[in-house]
Length: 389
Image (cartoon, rainbow, N blue to C red; front, top):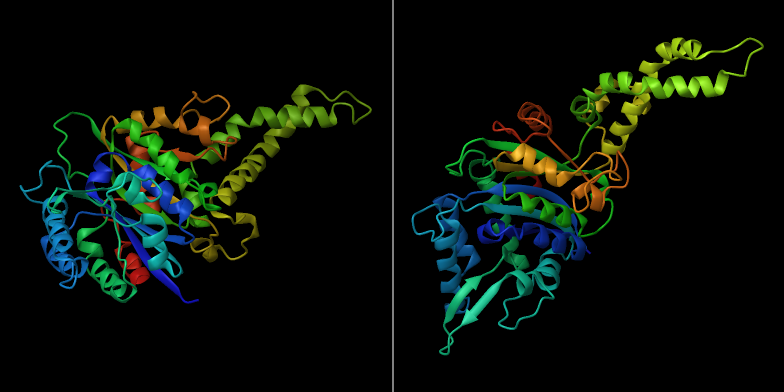
């Protein structure tokens, strides 16, 4: 069966009401497809004028066609007609797999229904209400997609055309009228994507407790070069913090290995020689977990720039005191010590496999965003366009 690309566009109202995690959980758990890209959009009038025509073609039921056109104008446009006066952010998710278009629409997103059923995304998060005369009174799709295989290529072509101008990092475009507005990077770690599950959505749902807004999103392969740069500051920390462990290990193994007394100062002297090598080994374990590749297995350093076997999802959360709010919901690095109800308490397994990473300072947020490609000068729009081609 020929593989197809299909998309799910999470609507501004769904994002505004923090339904994002629940919707993503459904998409990832129930779609038998590979997630290949995620990107935030705020659409231009030029895009929406074209999108209306292919989203609601002339052969569609006239009442539904008019509902779609009104929905686009009132909810997706950046204009005063937007009733809630919020930035109309959308999250675009691209999937790949056999029969992707029909499977995503029919089995996961679902059709509009006036019945209160929750077996699909629209059944759970969407609204479709008619009056006694059959006119559509209220319409909220929750997720937009293309149900028609023949038209799907036109949809993706349009998204590709406007990917760089209308998509990317939306930082600084929401007026909070509050002090201390910050942007925090959250990164969902690779084990969240090792198999189909709603776990990534559940983690995103947990971060919705912060009341912050998602203003950037990117699915990416962390390469060895990126991993070494991202976690580079940990090397020196490991040398200092793990030296005591090395000392204890050396003493336990050697204190009765000789005919002369082997003392703790002797063990400390040996540990001085081994502390850095031990730190490098522990550091490489983290890089291997995040990338799927052990740096020691790479003979040619130039290969580090592309070596990767894993996926991560990076999200930008913006709002007042974002760094502290995100860290509080994230929880302690050690899941066994994390406060109940935090991300790491609920989803973490150990110090390394602890669900997600979050920036611990505004300065580190900037550094980390530049590494993963979610800074204000992001240039991965062309890569995104290639996926849609």
